[in-house]
Length: 244
Image (tube, rainbow, N blue to C red; front, top):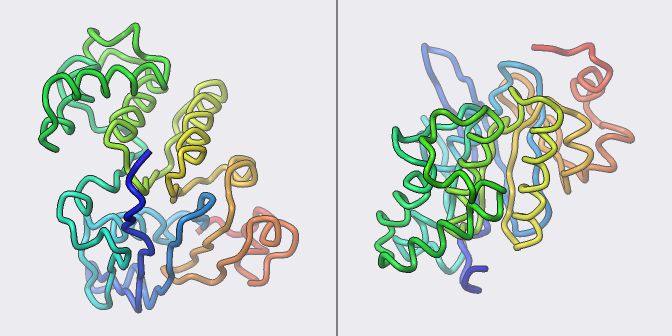
């Protein structure tokens, strides 16, 4: 799907993020490598969304370092368009469905024919090709989230950050989104995702990052995490005893 030159690994070293005089992320270090999805779990307020924004580059750490260390990281275009982020509430333009997909492709500098072809392929992939001409903001919540995923897929990213992409969706719409995420994985895209849905985490995760109080208390293989979490906080979370 993309060139062999990769942005990964992504290195996060001793990252702190401070707001309002409080450390919301504190001393976080991790490395993201190519491979199965990494799912970020933790109670409300643990810092999951903040961590995704820091890794994606939407926020700058107050201290520490976030750096792409792969050979493609020196290429500005790859650094800009080789990653994508989809939020819990999609950010959509007041334009048609297809215009929302075409817009980032135009920013990337692709020619008109390539943009049109890639945009339609992305909409076809998420089941929205028949709605290409509709205003994006009249779509249902699930359709809007699928559109946001199509826009990300059209860029052919190497890594995609997903922040609670199914949190406000009904089970059927959530399952459609999961199928699209599985398609990213089949294409070799690294998925990094937050979720409160433990069943979803079990279905999708290769490994788990568990956050509590802005710190990583555990990072482990998903099967091991759900079978026998090592930290007390993770055990309490899985037992429904830790909600903040």
